[in-house]
Length: 259
Image 1 (cartoon, helix red, strand yellow):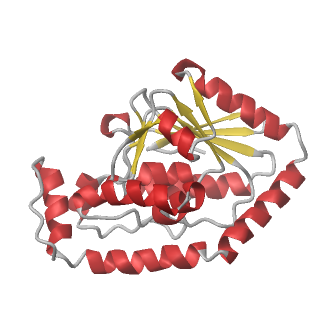
Image 2 (image 1 turned 90 degrees about the vertical axis):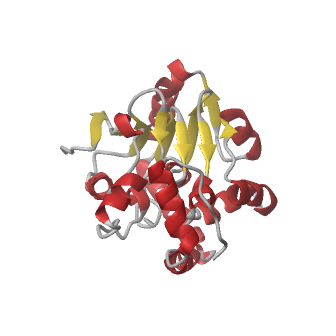
């Protein structure tokens, strides 16, 4: 597997995927979405790969989320794949575990990508937020649904309505991170977890994840994500949406009009 915006490495039965745009804090644009979708397709189809680890290049960011500058430049004409943000947020047919090794900022779609993994390990330097409301969006790529499911509606509402940033320890206390590691130990710990999952029956792990995927579908997760996309389409017609994107690109405070 060879890609431009991500890098991949295999160690025995483990696939290591690195989002590789450190100059923009591993923000994801249309081409990168599609590369990641292809990567997960390949992972799903390779019987010799049992577990994946997903991380970000550099020390500062796992992923800053949606690349708004790229989206504004393309006019939003390039679509993300049907499997969702980073090829993951609407993917329900992948029955192999993915470990997110969050090494820095996981913001917006970056946090949603981590939430779409099965296990989240965080560097003590990691920061998390769904700040879309600050730029005229909302967390439509499963962030509303997944965060609420993990930490409960009251705690999730505070983060979703404010867009505030939380550190790794608060994320762990809230229940959206499995473990907090020293930054230098993060990938070592991720590999230990991956090796642990490889030491048991891969067929049993896949069967377990198939049931977990089905449980989320039965809870209406995909239907709710689809509804989020409808609501986002309506939001994109508002002046506040246009103002949020323009203010971000122009590096100025937005001037909201509530319409």
